[in-house]
Image (tube, rainbow, N blue to C red; front, side, top):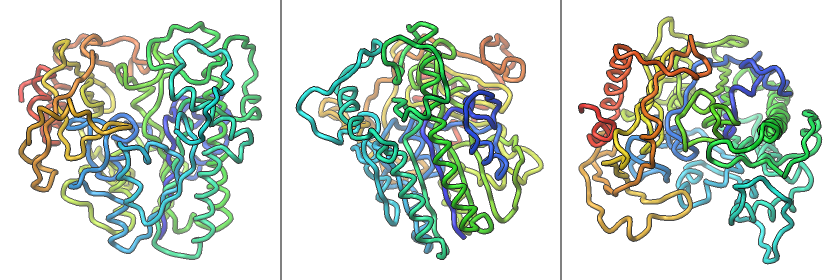
Amino acid sequence: MRAIMVMFDSLNRHMLPPYGCDWVHAPNFRRLADRTVAFDNSYVGSMPCMPCRREFHTGRYNFLHRSWGPLEPFDDSVPQILQAHGIYTHLASDHYHYWEDGGATYHTRYSSWEIARGQEGDPWKGQVAEPEIPECVAGREGKMWRQDWVNRAYMREECLQPQAKTFAMGTEFMRTNAGEDNWFLQIETFDPHEPYFTQQQYKDLYPHAYEGPHFDWPPYREVLETPEQVEHVRYENAALISMCDTYLGKVLDLMDELDMWKDTLLLVCTDHGFLLGEHDWWAKVVQPFWNEIARTPLFLWDPRTGRKGERCQALVQNIDWGPTLLEFFGVAPTKDMQGIPLTQAIAAERPLRDAVLFGIHGGHVNVTDGRYVYMRAPVEPTNTPLHEYTLMPTHMRHSFEVAELQETVMAPPFDFTKGCPVMKIAARGGAWHRFGNLLYDQNADPGQQHPLADIALEVRMIELLVSLMRANDAPEEQFERLGLEY
């Protein structure tokens, strides 16, 4: 038995043909849907990048206790568990957050790993002289912006781009090990994460008149740009999705050529979506997690069942990916894992969950039962009390500052820390209160444009939210921060 995960970053469900998009050129995603089960109610858990990857490894939520950071000493890791059961695991990735401080304990859980450099502002190529940067839309400047333009000079051909290198490494592993059994391959690209840097052949798929400043990297804020600029950046995103589609096709082609469909599981996923001007916002993590961010594309081929060309309505999440792999290889999940194998969700004749949580540390805590979505905001501007609970005090690119650590105390173990007490460090949660609580009926309002005012329904959703927070041993302060009874 073999398994392959193809993971994209910031891949928008609403930009894919299998989910109703009729203008993005992505024939291999159509082909994928014909060969797999596509999930219609797949949701994020913890936002954004590394919190999602911690959920994949551990099979449980990250955001109620901690923000971005490495795997903890007490964390379970699915790739590591597979290794312990004789399954070879390999990671091929250009996701540069793995080799920053805040992600440095993930890739080392695999039997082997390969990297491709140069995505976003990855500090890759050194250049003292200022790079040539065109006139750009306001909001793009700084160290990462400069470094990205240094990097682009070394990627003038498609084969030199990180995504192309990543898939080349992944398909090399497939060819090299096609005759072997008991392996898991994770091909993970940072694309179509911004900036939307790609080759002209993909841009040519979306001809449009645009004479404004360079714009392929939306800022994380409200939309201030013109309608023409908004349209342009959507086409830039679409061009990069078309590139992703091309490289997805190379994996599908190789599975055909090597006759892998008969014994190889294929999981195609993403960590979250991205706002391209919808709701008058760009990006993610700075606004409520509307469906463009929270509802994700997900595809699964399981050779044991042979089910393909189907849709699954079950409520599933990122925490389910790890348990899916464990179940496929006949390995039991740990007691701390709360994910459900996707194969069970497909086979079940009734819903396996009443609801799921999703969110970001210090932001709204969100709950959905598949129809209704409730977003619970902090009750006051200070967004307190709020703490990080960790033994790995590391932000995205650096460790916690000395000043952050000076008031640290040790907190008693949580039910998943295997008896380990953890550091309790004061955190700042941001001004999420300004959005207030939001309640949506996705059947009547699929675009989430008209929040409901229904006290009875809100009470029911609060009950689901509180129940799930308790089941995840959320700190009592999270309830207080949200104005809820523990």
